[in-house]
Image (tube, rainbow, N blue to C red; front, side, top):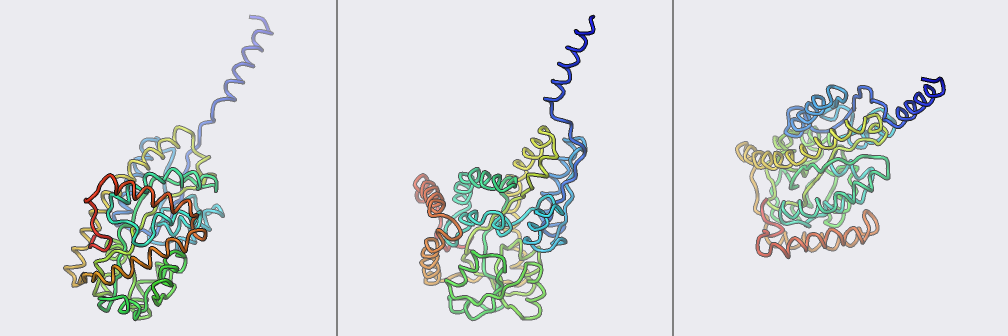
Length: 346
């Protein structure tokens, strides 16, 4: 072989090597969450992390900082932007700190069933994933918290009963802040980790959340009543910075995406059952579910409908509100007579 031929072959080999992605080094993704250790949320996240580690032969590991070790969700997002964390498993409140418009999926009194929630959210999720991608974040598959109820030390039979209580308000939640203002509720701004202690001290005597959250965070031990009317359905998701994703090879990134999508679907099923089980736990421990009178449901529904339009152009666009309403109405047209009332116990 001539010297020229050897140089040609070498040049081709170098060119081919340059076009191949470099094999990623072992990468640890640092993920924060408010989910308590041992909760169904953490069990699902831990299982997915184990599968990712196994299927990438240890090249990708997920390290979770659970139970609010890294602060509240605002702290998570700030630390991701500073490079101190790679991602977070958060509620829609945390997601809204990247793009607030995603809260259009959580509007009060919007949905009558989980089937409606699934239909609308699944249809719009790719739209929001693209929005997050433009802001430097990988939005993984949808997770959830569940139906959100009012939990209180004093019985609530009408809206004035709720107005008379000192009600926790997640200080970073602009949507719920707007709901409280519309309904005339007395909100006390606090972070999630502060709720339990302030229920104990009496600084607040009511809060809101899913049954599972109330049990997992021990709030249910400080209250006596829960409304049968859910105010909204709360979602969430894991998000990872685009910079962290770039550390993964395309093959490993696909494994993370695939497992995340499958585990998200499984987690939703698990969380729904866990919420039902949590209702039973609360009932056995003395929490009374108060049937919400039709008059209160109608009053809240009327104000919620007004609020949807009030917030268009502020938290989300008019077009995004229309996307949700069109998808919801499309579902209802296909399933006439199958949905429960908006204020029915969930």
